[in-house]
Length: 517
Image (cartoon, rainbow, N blue to C red):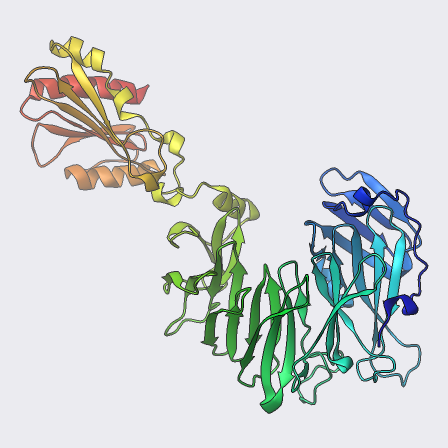
């Protein structure tokens, strides 16, 4: 049996501020870095130094991690993960880091794990425990850090077949959950010949602030996942799946993703299967959002491939894009797909999956950043900012139109643009006389990203050849003299006054003058 206090290798630190309020206050937004000699904590936003510690540094070694949320897996730089396993978690006041401890004895098989916990406010070590080797028995069991959840550090003790939640203040056991009777931890050494020699652990069970997920191998070589409440240790759900080779588990926001060379299965926080798909020698990718799971079949193209959004509450496919492929990511509230085959980046609307913008190789970080930062309606306007669209009502002031045409006045009615364009100005404006005169309508056909594109559109509208070298162009629809299209730079506008050629000419002069200004 593991008793954390009995295995302490570091004396508990003396709290600098022994306030109960401070004891429970979360310390977030902290960057903790170490060079092997000194461990330093800084405020992430400002870089201000909070503390420096030489006591904890020998246990943390080379470290570079961030604490972003009150309870989370702290982010660790990838280049450290390759050298040795560093699992960092954060409960709000305490940071735990797991490191591998190599043996000095050449014939000593396997590596031990040391979990060291420090006070994030003072930098003082509070407690540490050292495991046995993966092949050791119950006298000195192997264990590893699963994560932090609900003010607890959670560990898996495979040889004892238990999951334990430890108090971050002193390491005492807060709850313990035994694995199902016919199952063993998937982290136990496997007899599978494809096991990597340098890491006999097959799959790590995981924990986050929403859920603890124990992964086990059960009778008949079936893989099982057990969802455990992080606060109480109560089993929420259990799912058993067919035998699979070299499974891997991911956990984010309470969503569990189980992958193998031949399948991907995704479960929500309550054990609902969101997707269960076969894979064919490709690497699917996924992202978890607040209400959905976005799954992409990578660069593989075939029946049923593409990218899709699955509701986390119902498991229903909300939208699907079988025409796209690539690795999926999320940023700035948008979804993007990067494809190595075509060297393209597609930015998608998370609501319905429509393409907001497509970038082609060569891609620069500036291009990608601009595409992700653009408002959701960016591509519906062809990438043209909403500020570039003129107000058609301002192009033809009613008072000026009435003075020149000799009428008694006009009533102005703006015609709004479709919501998906995201414009703050109307798309057209109708000017109706107060008597029985002819109405005039000014419409913005489109604002194009270039003069060349606008000239092409004018040629199609009027049948008259337009040149991108010209600043402006005017043409009639269908050889009639009652509707005129005018291009000024990248803007194409139409002016209508049916049955009144003289009125149309007046309105066209005013509109043209305003466009040029």
